[in-house]
Length: 414
Image (cartoon, rainbow, N blue to C red; front, side, top):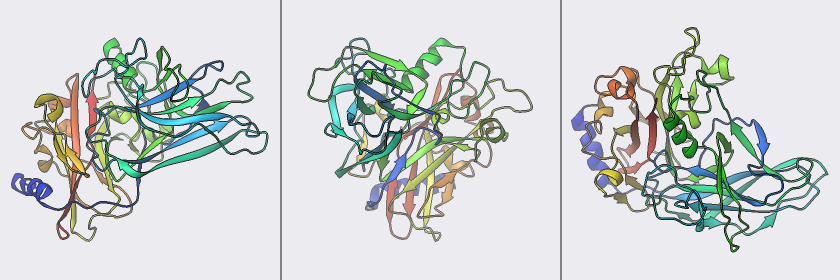
Protein backbone atom coordinates (compact mmCIF):
# COMPACT_ATOMS: atom_id res chain seq x y z
CA UNK A 1 0.00 0.00 0.00
CA UNK A 2 1.36 3.41 -0.92
CA UNK A 3 1.69 6.37 1.43
CA UNK A 4 -1.35 8.10 -0.09
CA UNK A 5 -3.51 5.04 0.58
CA UNK A 6 -2.44 4.93 4.22
CA UNK A 7 -3.21 8.62 4.58
CA UNK A 8 -6.74 7.86 3.43
CA UNK A 9 -6.96 5.15 6.06
CA UNK A 10 -5.97 7.62 8.77
CA UNK A 11 -8.49 10.17 7.56
CA UNK A 12 -11.14 7.47 7.56
CA UNK A 13 -10.32 6.59 11.15
CA UNK A 14 -11.27 10.04 12.36
CA UNK A 15 -14.24 10.47 10.01
CA UNK A 16 -16.16 7.19 10.29
CA UNK A 17 -18.53 6.33 13.13
CA UNK A 18 -16.94 3.65 15.27
CA UNK A 19 -18.51 0.27 15.72
CA UNK A 20 -18.88 -1.26 19.21
CA UNK A 21 -18.68 -4.98 19.81
CA UNK A 22 -20.74 -7.19 22.05
CA UNK A 23 -18.62 -10.23 22.88
CA UNK A 24 -15.18 -10.29 24.46
CA UNK A 25 -11.58 -11.06 23.55
CA UNK A 26 -9.17 -12.49 26.09
CA UNK A 27 -5.62 -11.17 26.26
CA UNK A 28 -2.99 -13.37 27.89
CA UNK A 29 0.61 -12.73 28.85
CA UNK A 30 1.74 -16.30 28.35
CA UNK A 31 1.87 -18.86 25.57
CA UNK A 32 -0.76 -21.09 27.14
CA UNK A 33 1.49 -23.46 29.06
CA UNK A 34 0.89 -24.45 32.70
CA UNK A 35 4.14 -25.33 34.42
CA UNK A 36 2.98 -25.68 38.03
CA UNK A 37 0.80 -24.08 40.68
CA UNK A 38 2.23 -21.71 43.29
CA UNK A 39 1.21 -19.17 45.91
CA UNK A 40 3.78 -16.50 45.11
CA UNK A 41 4.05 -15.78 48.86
CA UNK A 42 5.24 -17.93 51.78
CA UNK A 43 2.82 -20.42 53.31
CA UNK A 44 2.68 -18.51 56.63
CA UNK A 45 1.88 -15.18 54.98
CA UNK A 46 -1.48 -13.76 53.92
CA UNK A 47 -1.23 -11.12 51.26
CA UNK A 48 -1.94 -9.77 47.81
CA UNK A 49 -0.12 -11.29 44.84
CA UNK A 50 0.04 -9.18 41.69
CA UNK A 51 0.66 -9.58 37.97
CA UNK A 52 1.65 -6.41 36.13
CA UNK A 53 0.06 -5.34 32.85
CA UNK A 54 2.52 -2.70 31.70
CA UNK A 55 0.80 -0.12 29.57
CA UNK A 56 4.02 0.75 27.73
CA UNK A 57 4.36 -2.89 26.67
CA UNK A 58 0.78 -3.87 25.91
CA UNK A 59 -2.67 -2.75 26.83
CA UNK A 60 -2.83 1.01 26.34
CA UNK A 61 -5.14 2.64 23.87
CA UNK A 62 -8.04 0.27 24.35
CA UNK A 63 -10.65 2.92 24.90
CA UNK A 64 -13.43 0.37 24.70
CA UNK A 65 -12.12 -0.75 28.04
CA UNK A 66 -11.86 -3.87 30.11
CA UNK A 67 -14.96 -6.06 29.99
CA UNK A 68 -13.69 -8.22 32.83
CA UNK A 69 -10.92 -10.58 33.81
CA UNK A 70 -10.36 -14.28 34.40
CA UNK A 71 -8.44 -15.91 37.26
CA UNK A 72 -7.48 -19.53 37.88
CA UNK A 73 -7.42 -20.53 41.56
CA UNK A 74 -6.40 -23.96 42.80
CA UNK A 75 -7.31 -25.39 46.21
CA UNK A 76 -5.14 -28.28 47.43
CA UNK A 77 -8.06 -29.58 49.49
CA UNK A 78 -11.35 -28.81 47.81
CA UNK A 79 -13.35 -29.96 50.86
CA UNK A 80 -12.13 -27.05 52.99
CA UNK A 81 -13.38 -23.47 52.83
CA UNK A 82 -10.67 -20.94 51.94
CA UNK A 83 -11.51 -17.23 51.55
CA UNK A 84 -9.89 -15.08 48.88
CA UNK A 85 -10.45 -11.85 46.95
CA UNK A 86 -9.80 -10.75 43.36
CA UNK A 87 -9.02 -7.21 42.22
CA UNK A 88 -7.47 -4.95 39.62
CA UNK A 89 -5.22 -2.20 40.97
CA UNK A 90 -3.43 0.78 39.49
CA UNK A 91 0.26 1.49 39.96
CA UNK A 92 2.58 4.07 41.53
CA UNK A 93 3.17 2.49 44.92
CA UNK A 94 6.59 3.08 46.42
CA UNK A 95 8.72 -0.02 45.72
CA UNK A 96 10.38 0.21 49.15
CA UNK A 97 7.45 0.88 51.47
CA UNK A 98 4.65 -0.58 49.38
CA UNK A 99 2.60 2.51 50.19
CA UNK A 100 1.27 5.06 47.68
CA UNK A 101 4.13 7.11 46.30
CA UNK A 102 4.64 9.97 43.90
CA UNK A 103 3.47 9.14 40.37
CA UNK A 104 6.40 7.98 38.25
CA UNK A 105 4.85 9.08 35.00
CA UNK A 106 3.26 7.06 32.24
CA UNK A 107 5.37 4.34 30.68
CA UNK A 108 8.11 4.43 33.29
CA UNK A 109 9.59 1.11 34.45
CA UNK A 110 9.53 -0.07 38.06
CA UNK A 111 5.91 0.86 38.70
CA UNK A 112 4.33 -1.17 41.47
CA UNK A 113 0.78 -2.09 42.49
CA UNK A 114 -0.97 0.33 44.81
CA UNK A 115 -3.85 -1.29 46.72
CA UNK A 116 -5.27 2.12 47.54
CA UNK A 117 -5.81 2.62 43.79
CA UNK A 118 -8.69 0.17 43.29
CA UNK A 119 -9.86 -0.16 39.69
CA UNK A 120 -12.21 -3.08 40.39
CA UNK A 121 -12.62 -5.69 43.12
CA UNK A 122 -14.79 -8.59 44.19
CA UNK A 123 -15.95 -9.17 47.77
CA UNK A 124 -14.05 -11.68 49.88
CA UNK A 125 -15.61 -15.05 49.04
CA UNK A 126 -14.95 -18.79 49.08
CA UNK A 127 -14.91 -21.07 46.08
CA UNK A 128 -17.04 -24.15 45.52
CA UNK A 129 -16.34 -27.22 47.62
CA UNK A 130 -15.82 -30.78 46.49
CA UNK A 131 -13.96 -33.96 47.37
CA UNK A 132 -10.95 -33.90 49.68
CA UNK A 133 -8.51 -33.56 46.80
CA UNK A 134 -6.90 -30.79 44.73
CA UNK A 135 -9.26 -28.87 42.46
CA UNK A 136 -8.97 -25.78 40.28
CA UNK A 137 -11.64 -23.26 39.35
CA UNK A 138 -11.77 -20.61 36.65
CA UNK A 139 -13.37 -17.42 37.97
CA UNK A 140 -14.66 -14.94 35.40
CA UNK A 141 -15.39 -11.47 36.72
CA UNK A 142 -17.44 -9.29 34.37
CA UNK A 143 -18.45 -5.64 34.47
CA UNK A 144 -21.92 -4.33 33.71
CA UNK A 145 -20.19 -1.34 32.08
CA UNK A 146 -16.68 -1.64 30.58
CA UNK A 147 -13.92 0.17 32.44
CA UNK A 148 -12.24 2.66 30.11
CA UNK A 149 -8.49 2.10 30.40
CA UNK A 150 -7.35 4.39 27.59
CA UNK A 151 -6.04 7.10 29.90
CA UNK A 152 -4.75 4.82 32.65
CA UNK A 153 -1.23 3.64 33.33
CA UNK A 154 -0.06 0.24 34.54
CA UNK A 155 -2.69 -2.20 35.80
CA UNK A 156 -2.30 -5.20 38.08
CA UNK A 157 -4.54 -8.26 38.22
CA UNK A 158 -4.31 -9.46 41.81
CA UNK A 159 -5.53 -12.08 44.25
CA UNK A 160 -5.52 -11.99 48.05
CA UNK A 161 -4.50 -15.36 49.47
CA UNK A 162 -4.89 -16.32 53.14
CA UNK A 163 -2.01 -17.97 54.96
CA UNK A 164 -1.83 -21.72 54.49
CA UNK A 165 0.28 -23.34 57.21
CA UNK A 166 -0.68 -26.75 55.86
CA UNK A 167 0.61 -26.02 52.39
CA UNK A 168 1.07 -28.04 50.23
CA UNK A 169 -1.62 -30.37 51.61
CA UNK A 170 -4.11 -27.53 51.81
CA UNK A 171 -4.27 -23.91 50.71
CA UNK A 172 -4.88 -21.73 47.69
CA UNK A 173 -2.57 -21.07 44.77
CA UNK A 174 -2.74 -20.17 41.10
CA UNK A 175 -1.49 -21.80 37.94
CA UNK A 176 1.88 -20.50 36.80
CA UNK A 177 3.63 -20.10 33.47
CA UNK A 178 7.37 -19.68 33.89
CA UNK A 179 10.75 -20.24 32.32
CA UNK A 180 14.16 -19.23 33.59
CA UNK A 181 16.84 -19.95 30.98
CA UNK A 182 20.48 -19.50 31.76
CA UNK A 183 22.49 -16.86 29.84
CA UNK A 184 23.26 -18.20 26.41
CA UNK A 185 20.11 -20.31 26.25
CA UNK A 186 16.77 -19.57 24.66
CA UNK A 187 13.25 -19.99 25.95
CA UNK A 188 10.09 -19.71 23.92
CA UNK A 189 8.18 -18.23 26.83
CA UNK A 190 10.49 -15.86 28.69
CA UNK A 191 12.74 -13.12 27.28
CA UNK A 192 16.29 -14.12 26.45
CA UNK A 193 18.65 -13.78 29.39
CA UNK A 194 21.08 -10.88 29.13
CA UNK A 195 24.53 -10.39 30.57
CA UNK A 196 23.69 -6.72 31.09
CA UNK A 197 22.41 -6.08 34.66
CA UNK A 198 20.37 -3.05 33.59
CA UNK A 199 18.53 -5.10 30.99
CA UNK A 200 17.81 -7.89 33.44
CA UNK A 201 16.53 -5.38 36.01
CA UNK A 202 14.15 -3.90 33.45
CA UNK A 203 12.79 -7.30 32.46
CA UNK A 204 12.45 -8.33 36.11
CA UNK A 205 10.34 -5.27 36.92
CA UNK A 206 8.24 -5.46 33.76
CA UNK A 207 7.36 -9.12 34.18
CA UNK A 208 6.71 -11.56 36.98
CA UNK A 209 4.84 -11.64 40.26
CA UNK A 210 5.17 -9.36 43.22
CA UNK A 211 3.32 -9.47 46.51
CA UNK A 212 2.17 -6.98 49.09
CA UNK A 213 1.77 -8.17 52.69
CA UNK A 214 -1.69 -6.74 53.26
CA UNK A 215 -5.20 -7.99 53.93
CA UNK A 216 -8.44 -7.68 51.98
CA UNK A 217 -9.54 -4.28 50.76
CA UNK A 218 -10.50 -2.00 53.61
CA UNK A 219 -7.69 -3.18 55.86
CA UNK A 220 -4.35 -1.38 56.24
CA UNK A 221 -1.92 -2.06 53.39
CA UNK A 222 1.27 -3.98 53.97
CA UNK A 223 4.78 -2.67 54.01
CA UNK A 224 6.80 -4.45 51.36
CA UNK A 225 6.78 -5.44 47.72
CA UNK A 226 8.93 -8.37 46.66
CA UNK A 227 9.36 -9.29 42.98
CA UNK A 228 9.56 -12.97 42.10
CA UNK A 229 10.24 -13.10 38.36
CA UNK A 230 9.98 -14.81 36.02
CA UNK A 231 6.50 -16.12 36.83
CA UNK A 232 3.04 -15.32 35.56
CA UNK A 233 -0.41 -16.28 36.78
CA UNK A 234 -2.45 -17.73 33.96
CA UNK A 235 -4.89 -14.83 34.20
CA UNK A 236 -6.57 -12.95 31.38
CA UNK A 237 -8.06 -9.54 30.70
CA UNK A 238 -11.10 -9.30 28.42
CA UNK A 239 -11.58 -6.50 25.90
CA UNK A 240 -13.67 -5.52 22.89
CA UNK A 241 -10.70 -4.95 20.62
CA UNK A 242 -7.08 -5.84 21.07
CA UNK A 243 -3.98 -6.18 18.96
CA UNK A 244 -0.97 -8.06 20.25
CA UNK A 245 2.74 -7.94 19.52
CA UNK A 246 4.30 -11.35 18.99
CA UNK A 247 7.22 -13.12 17.40
CA UNK A 248 7.60 -15.94 14.93
CA UNK A 249 10.63 -18.18 15.01
CA UNK A 250 12.24 -18.09 11.58
CA UNK A 251 14.30 -21.25 12.08
CA UNK A 252 11.66 -23.70 13.31
CA UNK A 253 13.41 -23.96 16.65
CA UNK A 254 10.30 -23.20 18.71
CA UNK A 255 8.80 -26.56 17.89
CA UNK A 256 11.60 -29.07 18.55
CA UNK A 257 13.18 -27.03 21.36
CA UNK A 258 10.13 -25.95 23.32
CA UNK A 259 7.31 -28.25 22.30
CA UNK A 260 5.46 -25.46 20.52
CA UNK A 261 2.57 -26.34 18.25
CA UNK A 262 3.12 -23.19 16.23
CA UNK A 263 6.08 -20.98 15.34
CA UNK A 264 4.05 -18.00 16.64
CA UNK A 265 4.51 -16.84 20.23
CA UNK A 266 2.50 -14.12 21.95
CA UNK A 267 3.83 -14.85 25.42
CA UNK A 268 6.24 -12.88 27.56
CA UNK A 269 9.16 -13.51 25.22
CA UNK A 270 7.46 -11.59 22.44
CA UNK A 271 8.05 -8.28 24.22
CA UNK A 272 11.82 -8.77 24.13
CA UNK A 273 12.53 -10.56 20.83
CA UNK A 274 15.78 -12.23 19.94
CA UNK A 275 15.85 -10.86 16.42
CA UNK A 276 19.53 -11.53 15.73
CA UNK A 277 20.19 -14.69 17.79
CA UNK A 278 21.59 -12.78 20.72
CA UNK A 279 20.95 -15.88 22.79
CA UNK A 280 23.86 -17.54 21.05
CA UNK A 281 22.01 -20.71 20.17
CA UNK A 282 24.03 -23.22 18.16
CA UNK A 283 24.02 -22.79 14.40
CA UNK A 284 21.85 -25.88 14.04
CA UNK A 285 19.13 -24.45 16.29
CA UNK A 286 19.46 -20.65 16.31
CA UNK A 287 16.75 -18.42 17.66
CA UNK A 288 15.85 -15.55 15.37
CA UNK A 289 12.46 -14.04 16.18
CA UNK A 290 10.54 -12.26 13.45
CA UNK A 291 8.14 -9.52 14.53
CA UNK A 292 4.46 -10.29 13.98
CA UNK A 293 1.12 -8.91 15.16
CA UNK A 294 -2.29 -10.39 15.86
CA UNK A 295 -5.48 -8.35 15.80
CA UNK A 296 -9.06 -9.15 16.70
CA UNK A 297 -12.26 -7.16 17.06
CA UNK A 298 -15.38 -8.65 18.59
CA UNK A 299 -17.79 -6.85 16.25
CA UNK A 300 -16.05 -8.28 13.22
CA UNK A 301 -15.13 -6.20 10.22
CA UNK A 302 -16.10 -7.11 6.68
CA UNK A 303 -14.35 -10.31 5.65
CA UNK A 304 -15.55 -10.42 2.05
CA UNK A 305 -12.89 -8.06 0.78
CA UNK A 306 -14.43 -5.05 2.52
CA UNK A 307 -12.28 -5.13 5.66
CA UNK A 308 -8.63 -4.17 5.83
CA UNK A 309 -6.06 -3.85 8.59
CA UNK A 310 -2.83 -1.87 8.75
CA UNK A 311 0.00 -2.09 11.30
CA UNK A 312 1.20 1.42 12.18
CA UNK A 313 4.73 1.74 13.59
CA UNK A 314 6.66 4.34 15.59
CA UNK A 315 9.56 4.66 18.00
CA UNK A 316 7.93 7.57 19.84
CA UNK A 317 4.66 7.96 21.74
CA UNK A 318 2.43 11.01 22.09
CA UNK A 319 2.28 10.64 25.87
CA UNK A 320 6.01 10.80 26.36
CA UNK A 321 7.13 13.10 23.55
CA UNK A 322 4.38 15.62 22.95
CA UNK A 323 2.61 15.14 26.26
CA UNK A 324 -0.68 14.89 24.44
CA UNK A 325 -3.29 12.26 23.68
CA UNK A 326 -5.68 11.67 20.84
CA UNK A 327 -8.61 9.76 22.38
CA UNK A 328 -11.48 8.44 20.32
CA UNK A 329 -14.22 8.31 22.96
CA UNK A 330 -15.24 4.81 23.90
CA UNK A 331 -13.22 3.01 21.24
CA UNK A 332 -9.55 3.83 20.96
CA UNK A 333 -6.61 6.10 21.57
CA UNK A 334 -3.93 7.10 19.12
CA UNK A 335 -0.74 6.41 21.08
CA UNK A 336 1.86 6.68 18.31
CA UNK A 337 3.56 9.92 17.43
CA UNK A 338 2.43 10.55 13.82
CA UNK A 339 5.52 12.68 13.17
CA UNK A 340 7.82 9.71 13.84
CA UNK A 341 9.66 8.70 10.63
CA UNK A 342 8.45 5.11 11.01
CA UNK A 343 4.78 6.02 11.41
CA UNK A 344 3.98 5.34 7.76
CA UNK A 345 6.71 2.77 7.26
CA UNK A 346 4.36 -0.19 7.55
CA UNK A 347 2.61 0.82 4.34
CA UNK A 348 5.76 -0.19 2.45
CA UNK A 349 6.20 -3.60 4.12
CA UNK A 350 4.33 -6.47 2.45
CA UNK A 351 2.38 -8.32 5.10
CA UNK A 352 1.75 -5.36 7.42
CA UNK A 353 -1.37 -4.50 5.42
CA UNK A 354 -3.82 -7.38 5.07
CA UNK A 355 -7.47 -8.08 4.34
CA UNK A 356 -9.48 -9.17 7.36
CA UNK A 357 -10.05 -12.82 6.63
CA UNK A 358 -12.31 -13.88 9.47
CA UNK A 359 -14.93 -12.48 11.80
CA UNK A 360 -14.41 -15.12 14.47
CA UNK A 361 -10.65 -15.20 14.97
CA UNK A 362 -7.53 -13.05 14.85
CA UNK A 363 -5.97 -11.62 11.74
CA UNK A 364 -2.19 -12.13 11.66
CA UNK A 365 0.23 -9.63 10.19
CA UNK A 366 3.57 -11.18 9.28
CA UNK A 367 6.14 -9.27 7.19
CA UNK A 368 6.92 -11.08 3.96
CA UNK A 369 10.43 -9.70 4.26
CA UNK A 370 11.93 -9.79 7.79
CA UNK A 371 11.89 -6.35 9.40
CA UNK A 372 15.48 -6.93 10.50
CA UNK A 373 16.36 -6.76 6.79
CA UNK A 374 14.16 -3.80 5.89
CA UNK A 375 15.97 -0.57 4.96
CA UNK A 376 15.02 2.13 7.42
CA UNK A 377 14.15 -0.24 10.24
CA UNK A 378 16.69 -3.06 10.18
CA UNK A 379 19.41 -0.86 11.67
CA UNK A 380 17.09 0.03 14.55
CA UNK A 381 16.47 -3.58 15.45
CA UNK A 382 20.17 -4.34 15.55
CA UNK A 383 20.82 -1.54 18.01
CA UNK A 384 20.51 -1.81 21.77
CA UNK A 385 17.85 -0.15 23.93
CA UNK A 386 15.25 0.44 21.21
CA UNK A 387 11.48 0.25 21.59
CA UNK A 388 9.32 -0.32 18.54
CA UNK A 389 5.66 0.52 19.18
CA UNK A 390 2.70 -0.47 17.03
CA UNK A 391 -1.06 -0.11 16.75
CA UNK A 392 -3.37 -1.83 14.29
CA UNK A 393 -5.95 0.22 12.44
CA UNK A 394 -9.00 -1.68 11.18
CA UNK A 395 -11.44 -0.39 8.58
CA UNK A 396 -14.54 -1.74 6.92
CA UNK A 397 -14.42 0.10 3.62
CA UNK A 398 -18.10 -0.60 2.84
CA UNK A 399 -19.78 -0.18 6.22
CA UNK A 400 -17.62 2.86 7.02
CA UNK A 401 -16.60 1.62 10.47
CA UNK A 402 -13.15 1.86 12.02
CA UNK A 403 -11.33 0.87 15.16
CA UNK A 404 -7.84 1.43 16.54
CA UNK A 405 -6.24 -1.43 18.46
CA UNK A 406 -4.18 -1.47 21.60
CA UNK A 407 -0.63 -0.25 21.95
CA UNK A 408 1.91 -3.05 21.52
CA UNK A 409 5.64 -2.97 21.97
CA UNK A 410 8.73 -4.88 20.96
CA UNK A 411 11.90 -4.00 22.83
CA UNK A 412 15.41 -4.76 21.68
CA UNK A 413 17.97 -4.95 24.47
CA UNK A 414 21.49 -6.15 25.02
